[in-house]
Each structure stands twice: as C-alpha cells, then as structure tokens.
Amino acid sequence: MTENLERILSEHRFFHGLDKAFLELAAGCAKNVRFEAGQFIFHEGEAADQFYLVREGRVALQVSAPGRGAATFLTIGPGEVFGVNWLLPPFRWVYDAKALEPTRAISMDARCLRGKCESDHNLGYDIMMRLMPILIERLHETRLQFLDLYKSHA
Image (cartoon, rainbow, N blue to C red):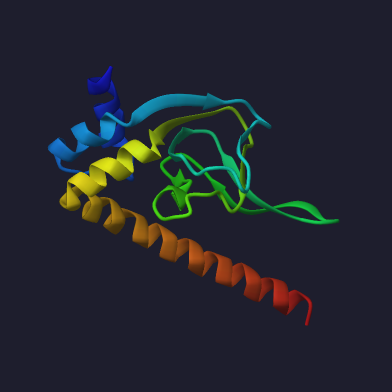
C-alpha cells in the first residue's frame, strides 16, 4: 500500500522529483480520499490537520461574509494542492474547502508530516521550497483579483 502511495506521490506535481528517501517518509503520512460534489472538506476555524494533493476533480476555496454568503476565491484542480495552514501555528483553517465535483485526492496527515519535517530538516526545507512558490503565486492572483474588483467599482 505504501509503495503504491509513493508512486502516486512521485507522479503528483507537488512531490515530483522529491528524493526517494523523502518520498518514503511522506508516503507514511498519506492516504487516498474521495469527496462527492457539494461535500465540504473542511470549514473555517477547524483544526488544520490535513494537507491535500488533488488527483481528479475540482475544489473551491471559499470565504463567507455575514449577509453575503460564500464567495469562491480560488478553484483548485488536478496536480494542485490546498490546505497549507497545516504548516504553521495556530494550525486552523481560515477558509472553507468544498468539492465542486467528485474529487480524488491524497490526504497528508499534518501532524505526521510536520513531525517528519522536524526530524529531518532537509525534508522540511524541500517541502517549504515546494510550498513557497505556490503561496507567492496565490498571493499574486489574489492581488490581481482585488485590483479587478476595485477597477470595476471605480
């Protein structure tokens, strides 16, 4: 089973090219998960105890505002990741995640992965270097969305 997860992880864009020894460590924290269309994966305020790698399907990341309901700020698809709040305290979700269609993913146990990154700082560094470009790209995309929003209200 772990060997199969190693293969799946190695083929996912996030872990592609990761050292084999690191893949073995990461696979020990992984499991396959499925979500139905419309199913919430997690809610704002809950413990951020998982990290997800999408294999198939689409997931909406949403924020809610009183009187306005939920607004999707990002849609995640195959080859992408979500749930990066697992990495730093206070380990809480700051948005909701909802499957838009049947979705298959790899769920990484956050405590397990944090423990392995803490025990092996080279693995931790590699994971961080893989996450930072994603976070910076998402920050840039959010900035552009806000600029478009303000432009349309000007």
